[in-house]
Length: 272
Image (cartoon, rainbow, N blue to C red; front, side):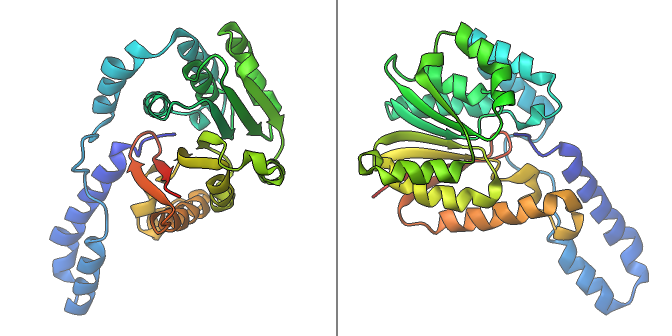
C-alpha cells in the first residue's frame, strides 16, 4: 500500500493557477466558465494530517518502527528487494491491524492475499498461542519468501496456507455450516475485481461483531482524481475501488470506517 505522492496535488494546484491567471483571460467567456467549473474538481493540497512524505516518515520513525517486532522488521527488509515490494502491507496499517486484532480478541482469522506474509506474520504474532489463520493465495512462491522468517518467529503452526483462488475456498468453507459465524477477523488484499464477492461470503463466515479489513481502497488517491488525469493502467482499479466503496458504504450489515493509511483501508464490523 502506498500514499499518494505529494507532488501530484502540488502539480495540480500549480497548473490550476497558470490556467486561471494566465490562459483564461484570453479565452471566450463560455469556455472560461466551463474551464473554471472543471478546475474546481481538481484536487488541491491535502488539508488532512499527512500533507507530506516527511510527515509520514515522522509517524513511521516515532510511532511505528520503534514498536515493530523484530521478526516483522526482518520480513519487511526481505520483501524490500522484491520487484513488487509495494504490494506488501504498509507497517502503519499493520500496526492498526494488530490493535484491531487485540480489540476483538481474535483467535480464528482468514486472510485473502498473502504476498510475502507481512500481515500474515503480524496476525500470527498477535493472536493467542492456540489461534489459527486460514491464508489463501494463488502464489506459494511469494509466500515462501517470508516463510523462513515466519518459522523463525515460531508461529508457522498457526497458519494453514492454501494455494488457490479465494472464491472456491470460501465457498467450500461455507458448505460446512459450522464455519458460518466462526471467524473473528478477516484481511483482504487480493484481486480487486472480486472484493464484493469476498465481502458477501465473509459476511456469512464472520461472527457478529467480527471485523474485515480491505486493503487498497483509495488506490493512491486516484478515486478522487479526474478520470482524464488517471494513468491508463490504473483506471480499472480506480473504477473497481470507487464501486466497491459505494457498495460497502450502503451495506446495512456493517459499521464502517475508512482509514487513510497506506493505500487506504476500509474497516468493516459485522452488525448482524
